[in-house]
Length: 269
Image 1 (tube, rainbow, N blue to C red):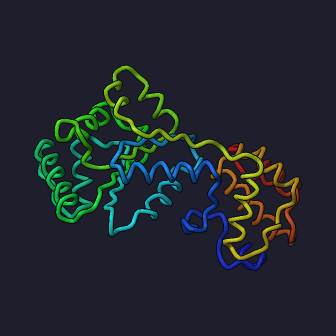
Image 2 (tube, rainbow, N blue to C red; image 1 turned 120 degrees about the vertical axis):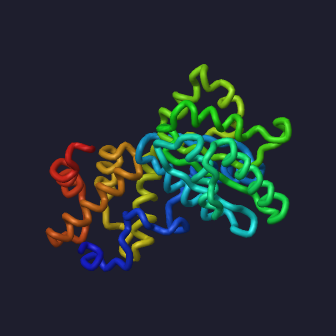
Image 3 (cartoon, rainbow, N blue to C red; image 1 turned 45 degrees about the horizontal axis):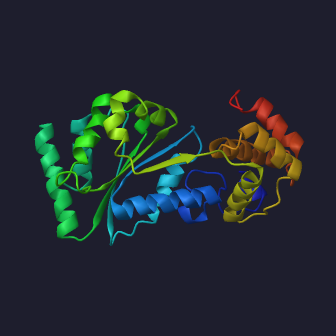
């Protein structure tokens, strides 16, 4: 266990790092602000980015900022989500058994959202992850779901999160009516060199160990090998820490990182 060797209290590059301890580059702060605006105004938002760029982490952090006193957050991640199962999934999270037919389940959801808005005085936020895998019928259903009071307002905030091909799909002519309803479009980019370094240091800071475990040249190699994709940065750093601890090395240089990338990354870098 490299944590003991490097005198760490937590594992630095794991998936369960608390949202408040995650590094937040300026562009991510801007994206969180735009999503908060969408939640408050009950808008339709789309978040896209390459695989591993931190979309799920962003959504986890975004959800953690929404106070339960003011919001009810529903999260779905299902590549085979049909319109009926979409409504069922939403109602399940509200503790309500959905009726069998889609139309009935849709009316149930609309009624519950009315109660959330009118009685509980809260705002509903629905987050759909892996949205690039959704079928045409489900995507088109969003247009009807967002119709409310003769299209004068939205019953809830809807956030679609998916890989880059989601936006490519939405640009097709068949989805013009859905695309025209999008209020906020966020695209997550890769981290640059300075952001990658601060990302690594912030995770080491969370772990409770030294922040300068990686040399500057090692940071350069990590940036090049990961292309600034957080998931790949995590993998390279974790395996480098593991290898260094096995070799009894207290400092991780470019040779260690290069060895790990060439021998332990299975061609993924």
